[in-house]
Image (cartoon, rainbow, N blue to C red; front, side, top):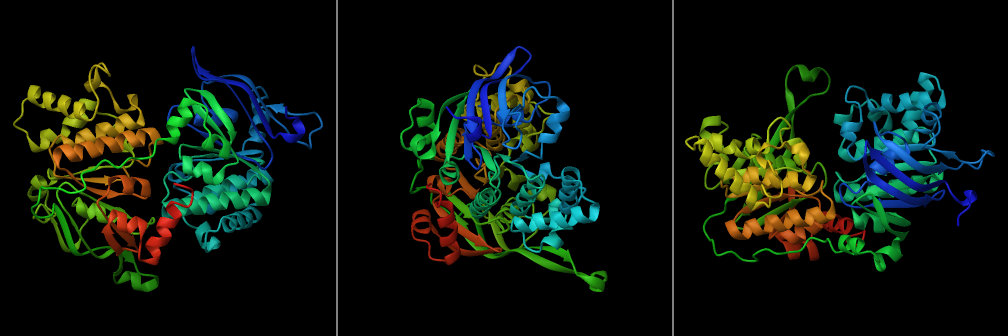
Length: 543
């Protein structure tokens, strides 16, 4: 058994509950100084709740057990995080244990510059004057590899890229010089190259400062690349833990083995007999945004930022075209143009027609192309029931249907995506918050399918889901494509999803298509250096 001299944190019998309901059931784990421990499991397994519970940040929660934080400089021994007074706990948060979150855009204050936000933490934790704290904030930003740290310190969160925002969150967490960093899904929303950069940054900072890291994630290849040890959670219990190589190489628990086997499987028609013209085709597609000119010239006009430049592609019936690239490459802008939501020049045809930009003229074309977005929780209205959400398209595109016929279509659409009244009594009257992430994504797919489109634009449809749910949603999309002959325009940074779903792939960089071709050719033998780097980054962690 480990002694306090070898341990930083010793958690014994941790239980977390709400009222009479217990959701974390007596878990044990330890973290040593300078160690990287990954806590993995599906959504709802209790891993994030465990991390938040260590800092007592869960409102109205009931805690029991012991979570001892050791400090070799305190001869009195360790402190139990679950029982010490709140005043003492406030001194531990940020100083000794810090946390970074999955989505920095919601964790950062949009009204303050990132430099000021970091400086506020520095002032609070290091008791520095405002000017000195501002200088320390710039140094922290520089330590995370953000270029031009002085200029970026004056930027607001929306003016930074996703990777820069996550680095700013890391800088803020380091402001208190913590001994333990809790990282809750820190790379889920990032593309493959940024994911690798953030992981490398955390590893470098961990080596430089000697801090330990508790990584909360559902990304198993990321665990293989980053962590020393792994603990697997299911239904609020740790079912297996040990060194990463041992657990991944010889998993003992059936649940762990199921997680390891949750790699997306390719099950698509490799050729289609549908024939006919492309469902969507573009030639010299260009999308630009007006941006202010610097200085006095800004009074007399604006410059243009070109987000998509000269893109050519064709999407055939019953096939999937994947669009890959780093953040800022133009993927999402291309998707917005495809949906008729972004003005463009060049030639873009959907089912042989062009977007006009006029609501009435484009209404029938919007029935041809529908969208499924990355985060179903934010794309589904929290004020509408499932029946209203799924049936909304029918009110617009088939207003002649009476209420009974409309409800029958809604029920059929939900059955097609695997949601039935038998499983969920009162299904049509429920609200989105009553469903899991995977179930909400199925509702979003049903909403898109109910108007019988020919094309779905899938914008990162599984990146917010854990591995087992991701596999289920991809299998659903594959089945629907086979049965209905649907075409998919797939925007993603997950190369395993590309391998499982795509027929053709285009790689974008700085708004230009640098390479295109069949999926096997582009993934296995990329020609362009940028595509080679993208593929190498995607599979660097053993995917």
